[in-house]
Image (cartoon, rainbow, N blue to C red):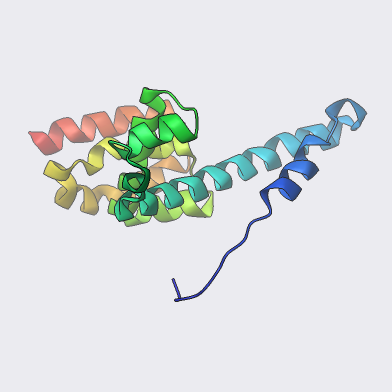
Length: 162
């Protein structure tokens, strides 16, 4: 990031445009299209949040106001429960550790659920070998659902840990 660069996202304006949509007033075809388009928006927003979370944790910004951990800070400031915070941090670290899967997630071609399924492969003890499998994970996630992807990663880990 360039020094002095400021990025401003008008969250309130974005939310205002989203919450005013009344699906009851829309034609069937438009509802069907919006279901897909809004899911893409959710996935893109999840990817942005995860990128910000990874940087937040990398910088240790949670320490600034005395939180014991990034997960504790997220529980307090974002009103999240423990499993959600732990999962988000694991996915944030995996997104950075696995470039192909991380890029697919950022591009919106795979979802948070896919990254959550792939994330265990990026554990520190197998990270080096996971880098070689990463492009395969990213491609497979394009046509598998997250449960199938989880099964693939679990099988791969059993073989990799061998």
